[in-house]
Length: 212
Image (cartoon, rainbow, N blue to C red):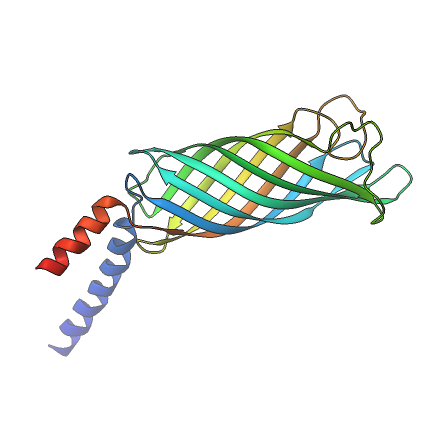
């Protein structure tokens, strides 16, 4: 009898761990807010392009079964060396908005695609000196990006998010030099955590439970 009770308890706990994330889907109208750590690299006119770090605040809003709005506010640093082996640092503040498509929104692991457009404000410097302006008539530009990610739901309100993104600006000045054969491009990988506010269905379910 004792063995059966232990077996049933273990099975119940396992089922609970499986079922709980499955119910943690993002319903229509659900709003998410999160923070991410970012590792990035710039494809620029520098001699070398090294890995830089950044952080972002992430926002999402579920429009329907699969589609949603996706937005970011962030600060990135791009690093490298010039042809004279001088260290270069380009600090970029950006904001964007776009669309996302979730493949398995009602599952604990949800892969998704996204595309965004926004503005980037940058200040490239050599060895922490004054901002470079050679050839740069402006210190901001439009940026376009897109990528893939995975959302893992811990429970109904929290999820872990891993994403990879590639993008480009419409000019060649984020590195401080107007030159080279193409516009400056960037790539980044982010890892973060997101909190989802209740959608209308969730609120109605809670109210019904309280009334009972």
